[in-house]
Length: 163
Image (cartoon, rainbow, N blue to C red):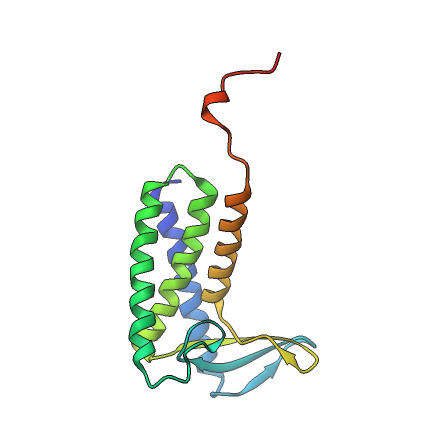
């Protein structure tokens, strides 16, 4: 996959993430809940920590620590997109992760927290609220795991046929 296509996918994820967060913050007040279905709400919440609010109770150092990790990971992913550009599914996966990482990185740097608003639940059991960036990261990670288990053709046997 060409590098500009991979970066374009990441940019689309980033734009969708930032636009959805901007929209949610323009229509909801912090903590406000809008029921959509019997298992899904829109809710505006802020997460100063990482996934599942890990480190959210810390005094603020986690903002820069997590931002640094996301920035370094983004640079490594960009390099890997270039180096492994011939691996289509791998690049799709990394592009989704990159777009999501950049979306949450933008929030951390500019706001000091990540904007979350997707609230899925069953009865009284709620999954932690998340956003488009988190969704892209998870989908990308699942595709990376799938890619790691997928059988790749052995170049040594590519030209031989069973007789």
